[in-house]
Every structure is written in structure tokens, then in C-alpha cells.
Length: 120
Image (cartoon, rainbow, N blue to C red; front, top):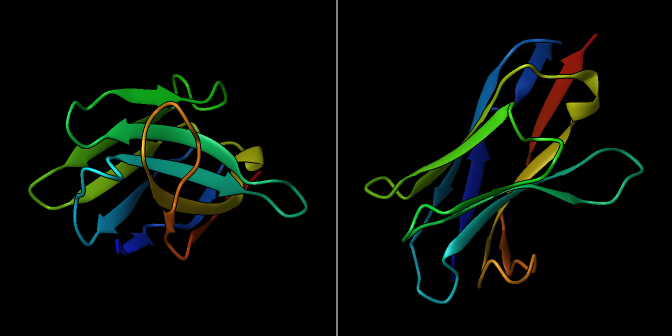
């Protein structure tokens, strides 16, 4: 079992920044990929960014490229999502999740989510 806890969400004006944190109970070889997803009201959950615990390899959705940065602190078992130049369309609940590989977006363990609201 892997537990994930997100924090750092909140209300910010357009153009502002937030840093989300995902505290992971343990790193495992079976679920080495940590992903950030977001889900806006009435929309499907979408991947935002992903990172490998072991290699640091990253992946970004087109909407996140150039604005968001995913990073990890292996000593703290924590993954971060630095979000800059936020837009109202970034408003969503943000979830972190642990998955088996970059070859699939499937994630087997999920956090409870943190709300991000960007005002115009």
C-alpha cells in the first residue's frame, strides 16, 4: 500500500504561483511514477505532469509546458508541482497518484486532492 497526501492548494489571482506538495508514505519499485492530475468541474481527470522517483525523468501535458515544474525530494518522499503564470482555466482539484510506469497513465494509489482556484 502507498498513501499520498497533497497540500498547497488555495486561491490565487491569474498570473500568480502556487507550489503543491505530495507526501508519499513510501517509494516502491512497483509504482515508481508519481503523477499530478487535475479535474475541473464537469470535466474528466487529466494528467498534468509526471516524474520517476529513480531517474527524475519528467513528462508534461501541453497545457503545463513552460509554466509548471515537477520535482522530487527522495529524502523526504515528496513530489512537488510548482505552478507559475496560473490561468483561470487551471482551476481544478489537483491529485497526485502513484503508477507502475511511463507507458501507462494508470495509477493505482491516489491522494484525496487539493483545490486550486485561480481568479481572473
